[in-house]
Image 1 (cartoon, rainbow over the protein chains, first blue to last red):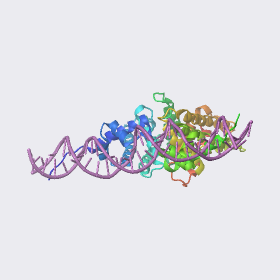
Image 2: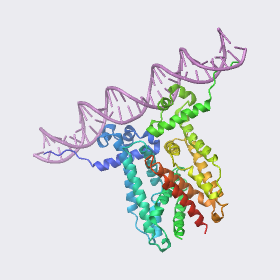
Image 3: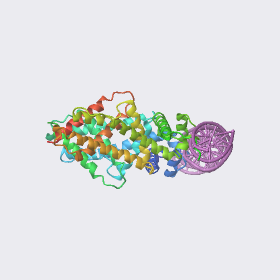
Image 4: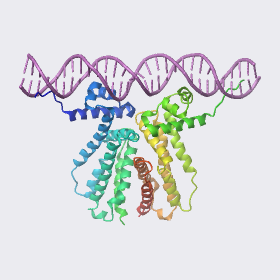
Length: 200
Length: 200
DNA sequence: ATGATTCTGACACGACCGTGTGATAACTTC
DNA sequence: GAAGTTATCACACGGTCGTGTCAGAATCAT
């Protein structure tokens, strides 16, 4: 038996995936082509297709990469002293408050729009969507250990809180880059305050 | 002086604009091409370009048509007896609760994504965005005439309420067509309830 | 009818698209 | 080294894209 050349395939995928992100953010979703991504990644289009045989596969990976990144960032957070503070940190990671997170959100939204009419992309989008919703629920649950949130039912508040997060995210990426994003962080904080009052 | 053939230009624009909507909803934003729209509208591509000289102009119109439609629908609502009920009706018109409004929202989101990287589309998107925000403010203001909402400051609650609306809208168009949408109406109603409590 | 003017549509150009094919390079084991 | 496997890449094909050009149809005051 003879062993051939071997590359780190997943590293290659990430490299290409991030190149795809840059293309989407810089030139828009309609420029997300095999050729443009290969150019951005500095490889030949044929090589790209060795890793991603078809455009669809690339798109799915691009979407999944967003989900993976967000997930990684969240599990890296260590809890603060108060549940409230911890949960606010968690939720903050879901908002495009800085350039890095903004890129993720723009890609997620752009490629996500393709999922509206492309059945192949649906599962990848739904995974991210469900993860987000599950995260909202878990965060709210964590909040209930705080005595101030005794009247809070996480199951009841998940949908609305999820909507607040995605709504704020949507509005954040609609404002010019480098513009102040603190208002959104304040809205998030205020929303969490409101959840405390709500439980009678 | 001699007068030539004259068509109702704005009617033609609407006809083509709606054809463009159908293309976007059915085949996705990447299929929004001069040729496809002309085919869907049943005219030659050259004729379409007589009304919309360039693709950009068509895109802008498509976006503006959404804004116009939503606006028209809202001004057509006649107030209910209670401010609360009226406002809830108003907000409901901003959510894609039925097929018609879903189409609008899908188009708005799809073409809106293009505005992220296309400066020509930015103004049209911003117009709709600002209208929506202004609407939220006005609706909340209307709510304050109700004694239950004495503690409500519309200026404070506009951003979050706007986020709730857009977040719910985003989630609604992510679920399969013909699936139940009542949950979102309930969330909206609940949000308005929460606003009443919040004012101490 | 006729002619000015608006409108329609067919065609062509160059560019980019996804993807199939096959030749070549790179690398590990023998 | 030599052989065999994997990885890289250039090229070509058919298709679609936006748009420029221009001939001709439709319309209305004269």
